[in-house]
Amino acid sequence: MAHFAKIVDGKIENVIVVKNEDCAGGDFPASEPVGQGFIDSLGMDGLWLQTSYNKNFRGQFAGVGMSYDETKNVFHGPAPFPSWTLNSDGLFDPPTPMPEGDGWTWDEPNLQWTQAE
Image 1 (cartoon, one colour):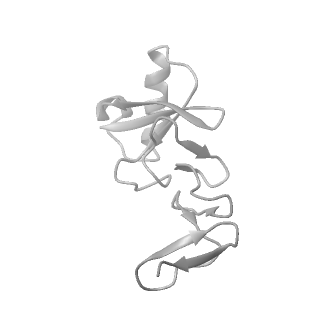
Image 2 (cartoon, helix red, strand yellow):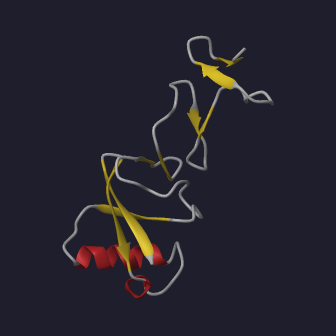
């Protein structure tokens, strides 16, 4: 089965399942234009992009309410903090890596990690 996400203004509006035979039985990326044609033949207009349940391409598996970054070509959820940046896996990275050990939390006003005492 292939999964396709409808993108409206950079947001995921819907995710559907398309049978492999309706995507020419192929693998991504060859399956995407065939699947898009099938979706279009059903009268479901708009931009539909294939998403990977196993996260093999386009970062995260698309879900309703998530976003699509066209530049990075990834689906992603919201940033946990404004200072964090989106990476090519559809995840957000802090400005500095988290130190080793347990109990660290991100202090956004000071842009640093703090450890609970």
